[in-house]
Image 1 (tube, rainbow over the protein chains, first blue to last red):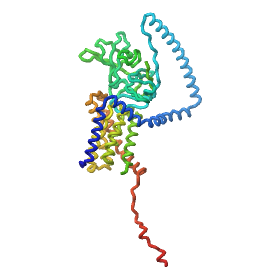
Image 2 (spheres, each protein chain N blue to C red):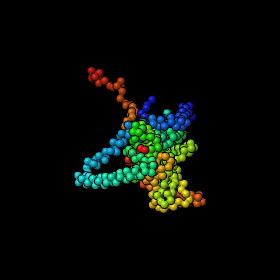
Image 3 (tube, chains in turn red, yellow):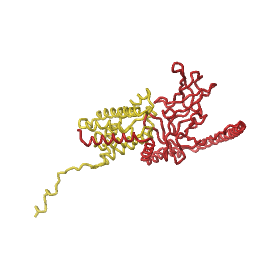
Image 4 (cartoon, chains in turn orange, cyan):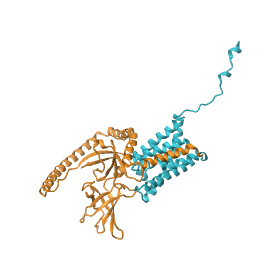
Length: 267
Length: 185
C-alpha cells in the first residue's frame, strides 16, 4: 500500500504545487500564458463550430426576410447618421466652450470590437477571455463595454487574448455616480455568486437620496474608467452600519451571462 | 509500458477543461459550471497508475487555472489530495459498481471545490462567495457524481475500440495437426 513510488509522486506533486504558488506574479502570468497556448488549436475549432450553425441559418433564410432586414438596417443607418451629425455638432460646440473656458479638451473614445471566446471555468470568479491581445494594442485596465453599458476591465493580457474581469468580480471595483439631484457616489463591488446581473453599490453617504430606477454611471474617479459610461439602474437601497452608510443593489444594463461581443475602449 | 490509458485520460482532461471554459450551458441552467476533472481523477485513481494520477493533477490543474482567475497551481493539490487516497486504497473499492463510482465522484467533486476555495482564502484571495455558493457546491457535487459513471463507461468504450485487444489463446496448434497425407500412403 505505502510503496516508495507513491511517496515519490506525493512529494513531486506537492513540490510542483508549492513551487508554482510561490513564484513571483510576473513569472506566474507568463507561465499562465504558456499553458493557455496549449489550447490555441482548439480556439479555431471552437470558433468554426460556433460559426457553422449561423452560416447554415443564413443559407436557408428566405429572400423576403433578408430584404426586410436590409430595409430595417437602411432605416436604422439613416437614423444613426442623423444622430451622428447632431452629436458631431454638439461635440464641436462643447470643444469651443471648453476652449473659451480654458478647460482641457475631451478626447473621443476609440473602440475595438472583440469576441468573447471563453468564460472562467471556476464558479468563484467572474471573468471572460476575449480574442484581442497585446498584438492588438490591448493593455491591462482598459475598460470593456457593450452598447448597453460597462462590462468590466482588462485584467491580464497575452499575445493573442486577454482576460476581462467583469463587474461583480472581486477584482473589478468601479467608482460610480447616481443620476439624481445629489449626484451620490459609491463603489460597485462584488455581487452574489448566482445572479450576475445584480451588483452592490457600497460606500454611499447616509444621506444618499436613492430611488429605484435611477441611472448609475461611471464617475471617472480612480483613473481606469472614463466618466459617463452607463452601468445600470438602482433596484433598492438600505441603510447599513446603524445608519452611517447606505448600500444599494444595482441591476446592470449589460447582460453579463450572454456576452458574445464586447468593445475595448482605448483612451 | 502501455501509454494508451495515460494519453487517453490526459487528452480527455484537456478537452474537459476546454469544454468547461467554452460551454456555458450548465451555468445558465443550473447557476454553476460542472467540473469534470474530479470525475476523471476518480477514474485515473482507480484504473491507472500513480504517475497518471500525478500527471492528471499537475496538467489538469494547470490547464484549469490558465483559463481561470485562480492563481496558477492552486487546483493541483486539491485534485491530488482527492485522488491519492483512492489510488492507495483502490483494491478495497468495488470500482466496477456504478454506485461506488457515483459516491466517489460526489465525494471527490465536493472535496476538490472545497479545498480549492480553502487554498484561495488561505492565500489572501477574495473569491466570490455567498449563500449562493452553497447551491453551486451542491450542483458541482451532483454533477461530478452523475459524470463519474459516464466517464467510466466512456473510457471503457474507448479502451475497447482504440486499445489493443488481449491476445486470446486458441486450441489449435500446428505441431499437433494430423498429417493426412502420411496416413493416406
